[in-house]
Length: 70
Image 1 (cartoon, rainbow, N blue to C red):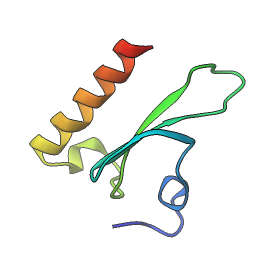
Image 2 (image 1 turned 60 degrees about the vertical axis):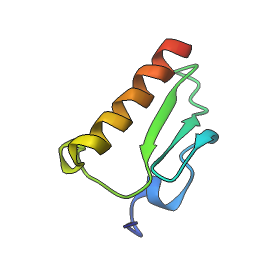
Image 3 (image 1 turned 90 degrees about the horizontal axis):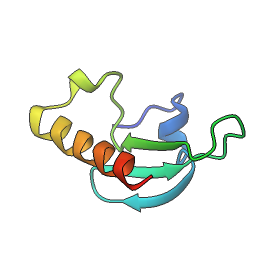
Image 4 (image 1 turned 30 degrees about the vertical axis):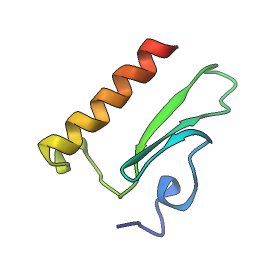
C-alpha cells in the first residue's frame, strides 16, 4: 500500500543503490549528514512494529548490512 501524502511513498527517497520486492536502500543528499542512507520498506508502514516478524528481520538485516558497509 502507498499513501499519496507520504514523501517516501511518492519518491525514491534518494539515489537508489539497492532495491528488491520488499525494500530499497537510498543514498540521501543531505549536506549536514554526509553518507546518510535510508532503508525504506516499499509498502507504507508508520512503525516497524506494523511489520510481521520475518519482514522486520529482513529490514533489520539490511540495516545492519548497510551500517557494516559504511
